[in-house]
Length: 188
Image (cartoon, rainbow, N blue to C red):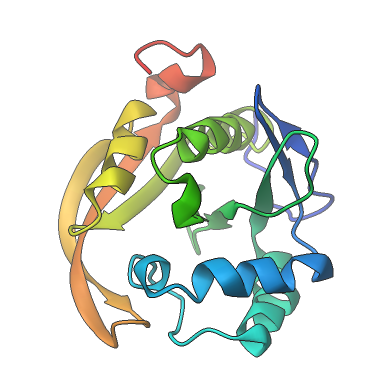
């Protein structure tokens, strides 16, 4: 399948427990509530701290239109628990997986379940040959999510973190299509 990184209609995705839908204006308060939490913001590269409604509006108006982004909700609920998405990599036939989740739901498997659906979408619907990702070294749970999906480490780099106001040690990872065991659930 040919890689299609065009950002047309973003379909809703569903898993056993989750519904993934495009974020919308009704999510502003939930986005601020989650991303405004220092424990979340310090684990993300592109999020300032403090984070307020104007930042959430910028995210909805300028970031989402340029990326494949979904709000993570429980089936039967429209309440945003987190966000997950694929950012097309400039000049490459790849996209970067990124995500954040409310600390109230950390350790529940929600991130892994949502990431499995988004990675499958990237390979099956977009035709991506590779999906990249990464995490800050002081956030090993994020690395465990990626490893469960079959991502392998590709290197260590310093990466800017807006909330911290400096570069922080980061581990880069990638998943090539032939390694996509997540599609069948093997090894997860």
